[in-house]
Image (cartoon, rainbow, N blue to C red):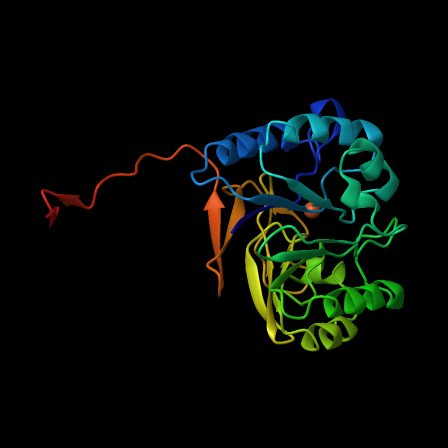
Length: 271
Ligand SMILES: [Fe+2]
């Protein structure tokens, strides 16, 4: 099974530039074009939050339009820039978004890897959390299929990254979540967004990771207050390949690069 992860698309209405500078609509178009020619095609695509920039209906309308060409089933979760009601309204065919109101939490059972989605949003705040209600849902949901390998998708990563500013708007109190994850060793991975970079940490006997953005990346500044800005570094997405026994993650960059060129000629390495 192949899962493609995209994150932090930050679409604005009328293709306005994010922060007056970043053409997030064109960036998502380039990302979608790159995904459409992947061979093999992903079985599913997950989009891990900050789908739009200000949670507005007209932003979601453009997002839906930009995502429409994608062929694999698409699973969306909200981030701190999203708004649950507007997200649900813009994707009426995405029934899973309504599995458990008011939160956008759901489980997808159709694939070799079970997908369990969490909603870390605190409305009108940049940081994230999982309240007792959401954690209880997670514990119950994971208990329903203890033998099925599972990935958890959530916007805010439940770990400190060292990028000080982003940690200040990070996930509050990871300990209770860690307690739940430790009880469910079938969780292969917690796939997150929010950081606009690829970052990995061991978490509660599993692995937590974040994904680059197809648009702008948070500045890599490993110091207090660092990361309160972005760079137009090469954009990207991730491919998570499930071999049947292990989940292997590849970070891909989006762009036109020369190649591939051969290593060998006539069966011998080119000297
Ligand atoms: Fe973001």
